[in-house]
Length: 365
Image (tube, rainbow, N blue to C red; front, side):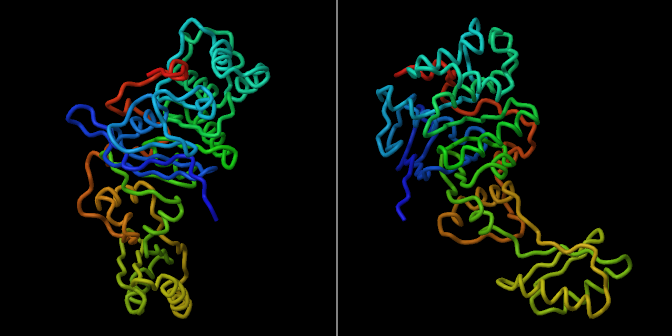
């Protein structure tokens, strides 16, 4: 089956003076996917997006959208296929939300856009504030207006830079649901350092660290490859030591540890299913009641830290990671990768930020 890639980069490199922001980035994002572009602040996410938009020229390498080379002088017709939301959208302060969307529609030369504008204002809970000056909008309202502006032309590709960073939990949930609903309707590529958003929304993930891609694949494949070979077991009070001794005697069990009433069982390589079957059977034969027995699942955050600690070697070689702790974690990555859904993303790159409206003008920078 031929897979069409909406985004393709090869050896993409960007330097700002002596600082290398991107270092040989290779990307291939399939059409119709929702891809999370994941990395700590300063990893190169916004710089990549600006190059893809033709707002910033790369130092080396190539960047293609829809199979066409991106340049600073792309025609307006090309830009109609791309919706963009910067991390901190900026609008003319004297314009109302309604006027901003009408301005965007005029920029895209969209005839008869009035109905879609009002649909988007309703969808993003801006209808009551549609005629209010944007200067009086909260940061969250500006973020929602930016999302509406990005979606207005019904683009083939949606590029989003920290799209829900300023939204409250309810707004974040609704925006992520909207993004999820775009699957197979358009391709979505959004940068974030909030891992829970990627797990909730994406089917594909690209991890970038210090300007280098350290992993790129389907989300479920990545989680499966770095899955643990461990179960956690709780039994009835007073039988923990019996269950622990029993587990340690089983051939599929490499290690069994009891802590705080929970027995963590680590299987020998490739024997996870055998561990599960033998433990259940043995406990039943000894009349030990099981309270809880479940597979230990890795979070995307722990996988990211493992990939970064390994320098992407495991990702590039296709080797699975272990369930154990990695000895050396990158402290910058650990501080920057925020799992909380209420986190607000600070400005992320060396390159300057662009406003949602001004960045839509052809040739703007």
